Image 1 (cartoon, protein in one colour):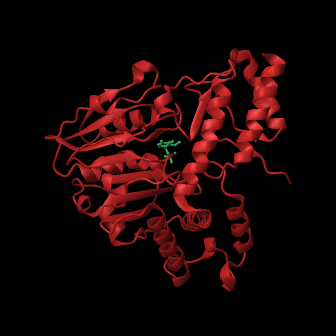
Image 2 (cartoon, rainbow, N blue to C red):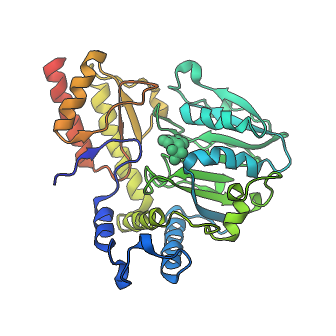
Amino acid sequence: MQRVYNFSAGPAMLPEEVLQQAREEMLNWHDVGMSVMEMSHRGKDFIGIAQQAEADLRELLIIPENYNVLFLQGGASSQFAMMPMNLLRGKSAADYICTGFWSKKAFVEAKKFCQPNLIVSTENSGFTTIPEAVNLKFNSDTAAFVHYTHNETIEGVEFSYIPNTGAVPLVADMSSTLLSRPIDVNRYGLIYAGAQKNIGPAGLVVVIVRKDLVGQAITNTPTMFDYKFHVDHYSMYNTPPTYSWYLAGLVFQWLKRNGGLTAMAEINQRKAQALYAAIDNSGFYKNPVAHNCRSWMNIPFTLPDVALEATFLSQAKQLGLVTLQGHKSVGGMRASLYNAMPEAGVQTLIEFMIEFQRKYG
Ligand code: PMP
């Protein structure tokens, strides 16, 4: 069977080596006579898998000791609520930066718990820009935290810098950024990321939270929404998503074998630059995002005529280039180039785009 190049924004491609290892270990993990899916999360085998995954993630991201790492359920969307429930710490306001679909969702959800200040929104630009650092004016006295989305998966914009919020904890949705490059965890109060891009299967969400921010959830916070319970129980307060956690662990080991996040950053940048150059030099395809804030991970582009889109997608599919349709809110095409997308996949896409233009341009 031929595997395709899947340009989905998530669930996205996983490294083939990881899938093969999972297949080999599926029926009988390390001679215990069962699959990881069938193991008790309280048993020493699964606890070993879980601890190794956390240790590897800590090593990859150089996560300092004063941060907790949590493997939770509910996807990144659960964090839109969990974050204000836990981080308001007696305050009634938080600052939100809106640069696209996902940061706007986080902002709207926060209204259930506090008065979120929309300190800047780039909606007028159609979410094709990122505010300049000098234009970010935080409510340093009243905001419990500042939230932003480092990479907007749908619009394909990303921050090229980390906002400087001074003493106010910075919270980042890193769903489509985490593990694609090194990041300075010390700059953040909390980072969360849905797994289905660079980490592993959907459903799992990784949360990295500074220890001093845990333990002050608002009254009546459900147990499952209180970081403290998850910290105290090593993310095993209830039955965790064991198989997703195990697969994430295999991905972390794959990253370590392949040069870690510095190597990923180089490859990811190369892949993105190649595709942006192909778009910009074509005079046919267009990417609407300002050059200084173009995402390395999610690259939307349009064709000169929407009537060509169906043909583009069906011909791409014949070459094994799939899930290239853009999100319905922006239309056009989108190629997501997470860690597991090989450079050969991007090259094949570029060659197809050139050939398509030659026929229809
Ligand atoms: N934030 C970002 C940046 C995303 O890309 C996504 C999903 N594509 C989400 C949040 C929501 O994630 P989930 O579906 O895991 O809740």
